[in-house]
Amino acid sequence: MSSGGAAGGAVGEGAARGIRLLIADDEHLIRGALVALLNLEPDIEVVASADNGVAAVEQAVATSPDVCLLDLEMPEADGIEAAARILAAVPTRVVIVTRHARPGVLRRALASKVSGFVPKSTPAEELAQVIRDVAAGRRYIDPEIAATALTAERCPLTDRELDALRHSRSTMSVQQIAERLHLAPGTVRNYLSSAMTKLDASSRHEAAERAWQQGWI
Amino acid sequence: MSSGGAAGGAVGEGAARGIRLLIADDEHLIRGALVALLNLEPDIEVVASADNGVAAVEQAVATSPDVCLLDLEMPEADGIEAAARILAAVPTRVVIVTRHARPGVLRRALASKVSGFVPKSTPAEELAQVIRDVAAGRRYIDPEIAATALTAERCPLTDRELDALRHSRSTMSVQQIAERLHLAPGTVRNYLSSAMTKLDASSRHEAAERAWQQGWI
DNA sequence: CCCCGATCGTGACAAATGTCACTGCCCTAG
DNA sequence: CTAGGGCAGTGACATTTGTCACGATCGGGG
Image 1 (cartoon, rainbow over the protein chains, first blue to last red):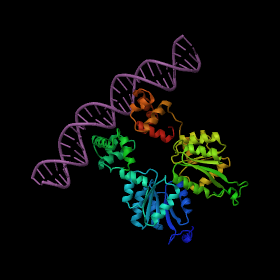
Image 2 (tube, rainbow over the protein chains, first blue to last red; image 1 turned 30 degrees about the vertical axis):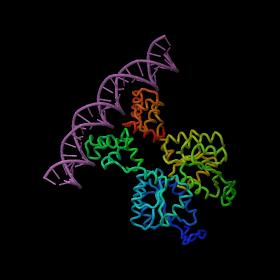
Image 3 (cartoon, rainbow over the protein chains, first blue to last red; image 1 turned 180 degrees about the vertical axis):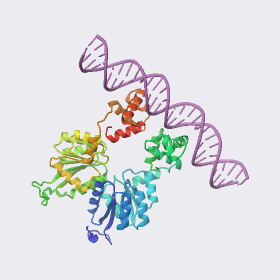
């Protein structure tokens, strides 16, 4: 409602037009709180919000915000997928915010041309600054995550191994996985075994857990 | 900051003194956003915040707030434990807010004399009203969760079975669990097996997962 | 007193899971 | 063409995990 985007007289910057922001997070409470927090900033105006990935895309197309703040964990389409679709359709910039900052996810996010990546452990004061940076065309990657992602090696797993691991996260017998993948049970065991070796795990569940934490699945 | 607790001239209620609120959540960003959101309410004043359970207890003792808003998932001491300690030391009321609203957890929360229980999917507008209700001595339990908790049966598992299941959530071999519990491996398998039967699961991981979702472990 | 049920605990057996050595296929380099 | 390396797929074997039938211990009646 506060359409007075030119309100920011207090800001010393040159062309201090208000930043038009879209917020997407599936938890209603968090979303509302973020809206409140960021609307307090004189140079930021929240123009749209959504509670899932596809709604975020629609809203972005409808409102053409300057910056989109997307939660990574969302139903329908996760933050990265939503970011890719939004950036394909609208000239805007995306900041991903996430609870579990897994290295591989950062990699995928950057591949999708995301401009900012921050964990939910970021101090609240900093978020507004990140949004300003990104709006100005700069990038911001949380240093902690960046360091982890750089030291973390690239995924050593083959496609099939990843398929098998993906299904191992839920409680599924090897048989069921095999059916799902149209493979012989032995083959699946083999993939899981080699994945376990590569990941130095002693059960497929541990391997799947580890791969997930790295953001590989 | 804004110590003008008596500001609420707009509020029609009789003795509209400001509600003094403590907020605890381990995610800095969320905590900051909640503070911003609730400080917008004219009759609410955030007087303390903490990022873990024990800090929350200390802050509560130091500031004697009217209401404490505690996240369930926190390091050091979870929301329920913190609630119990706070209520033992300070005359105040507690609202638990959580991401995964598991039935058994509600049960434990109520046993700890918590006054409010809301999921993070609650609309932001509603939270302030819950806090007012609780401050006025009433209770508020999210209807959805309450219904689930009422239909959900009580935990059918024995103590030892719960012990074994607890350890089954992490990736541990039966051997290791047995050592940890000072038992023979066979015994552990037995407990797990009976738990699996009771929970209609086909692996201990599935059983552990199910027990966790019910809030039994 | 003894029996009874409930709970904890153990070991033998069957089924699943993980390991290994092997074959076939495709692609690339020589 | 063909040799070789990497990946997909298979079946035989050892280990782990889950099932079962059976003791031991402990209280509370009859």
